[in-house]
Image (cartoon, rainbow, N blue to C red; front, side, top):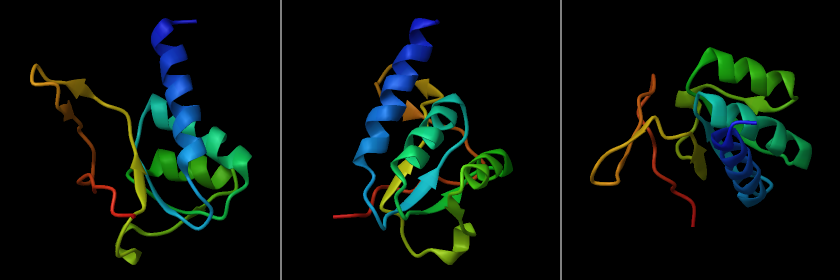
Length: 106
């Protein structure tokens, strides 16, 4: 296994443990989110998701997760996406179909 794959899997599993019942979860697109979805689904929580792509939406629905329209939510508790690029200033650069939303939960 590629060492980066193992790191992504570990990150996905760790993030899934941070999601709590009743949260609204933003789902990004890519390999890290693809690993996160089954980890979250295994927890059997009652969460509401919104997705940045049709592919992620289909994968979440196939795992029995509830996915709603992006504009039907007024806030997200957490958004999960991988980093497309880390800049020299150590800021994450992401490219996605929709703007990233910051964590708004308490």
